[in-house]
Image (spheres, rainbow over the protein chains, first blue to last red):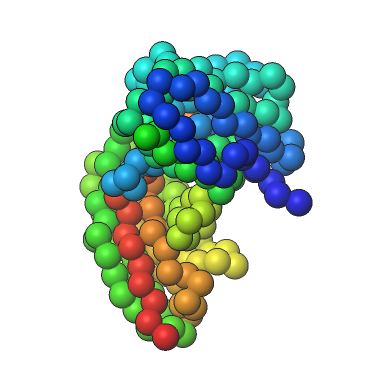
Length: 111
Length: 112
């Protein structure tokens, strides 16, 4: 059973399109995160939700909108995609003060 | 966010011990030292963490200097599967979500 699963794994799309990445965790964790890893391989936190409430919101364009329908899910919707949005997006979860468990990543390519 | 400094890359041989250093001279008294690693084409995974005392788990050992300004992750017997980027991260000991700040990490290559 995959602990943190993301779909899709690969996403190729045109500039200007809107796309979503879904994340689900079956670990019973109360906190979920989105991280972005760019071409230089730096991992940067974007958002974090605790019990469906947004608690970390880094400086991210408002074209990115996270949504947490319940504790086990955190989706990322991106409007008006730009070339610079091309990256690998990682979802993670944890108990509030515990270690993070990451998904395998979703590679987004914007053409 | 307190900063850590790690070598860009290291190389070792299979079945030999590996010592991965990390400097964190600006560490505060409430910062935990965390290590994560990222295998190729995978998400990061937790390795170990500590505060003051040395720590051991099934994956690795963490040796923390007495002044806490540096630490060393020790892989006792490296395998090819240990080839990854290793991140040393400081996390404040406060309640709240883990805003883990990843640096560049050390890319570890294991030779057969």
